Image 1 (cartoon, rainbow, N blue to C red):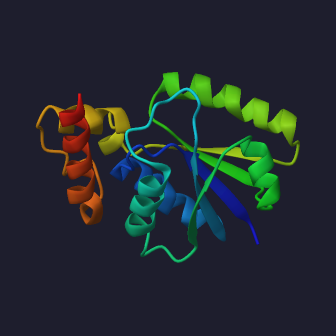
Image 2: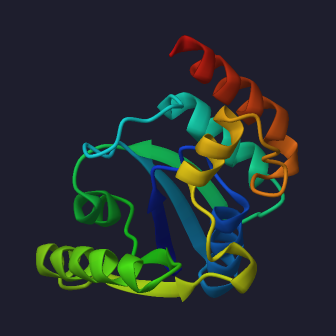
Length: 164
């Protein structure tokens, strides 16, 4: 069985993330969507909220499993017997960072491949940061997030914005 990991902070999950996950699910037998603790980011949503959002948004994809983890991605991949990491790319700037991460993961585990999937043209601009910014300023985030979790995400963004 070919297992791949789609890692990310998913703070919050967007329709762009879901597009990459669905496409990965067609390429691999088992896809683990791994919600990670990124030390460089300060998440707006808890790890539990992010994994819950992803479970709801991917409920219709049979071969997808949602998990959270901390530590090295290469170690997590080895633990889960994954042979690949799947990453979505929006722009050249994404590639530079992701290429560096791919080489690092390959150095840590020579059997671990990174597969890059280019985003669809409709999602090239989309990021979790954009969702949070638009939502915090009272804009409509419905085109950017899965419909099944839209209200929960919007409520949390509003709560977060009112705390500041």
